[in-house]
Image 1 (cartoon, rainbow, N blue to C red):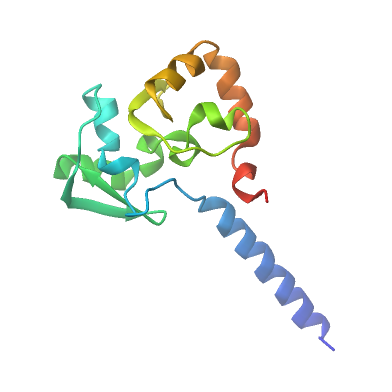
Image 2: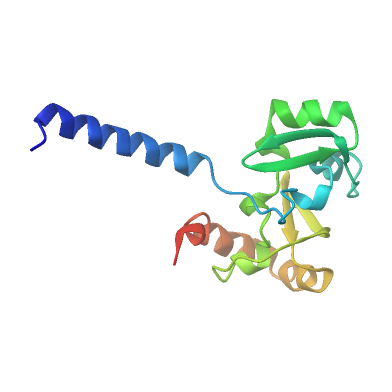
Length: 150
């Protein structure tokens, strides 16, 4: 039988692990481990177009490898990855409005209020864009719980 101290310690450890897990939400990446198919997340904000990153300028974050077009972009990402990483872990923003996970096309994207959203394809992006504010609100209701549903 566990002592009261052991039970409290076990409970505290479980709470701590749960909090850490919630902060370290999974990111969509391909089987090769690349986030955003190797595109530079910072380029969407600075250049207004997706730019392929270089494998030699990379960083590991949230279990995925992120590539960058320049050392400066990598450093900016490392200083604040959440400012540049796509919303919903890089999963399709439109699919998220239905509580579903779907892959994304780095060329189907939009920045809304300083946040990067990716969608599955240009056609899906147009559908998502039709009711943007409501779709973002609906997707936020599912995120991140959609990651843990059976």
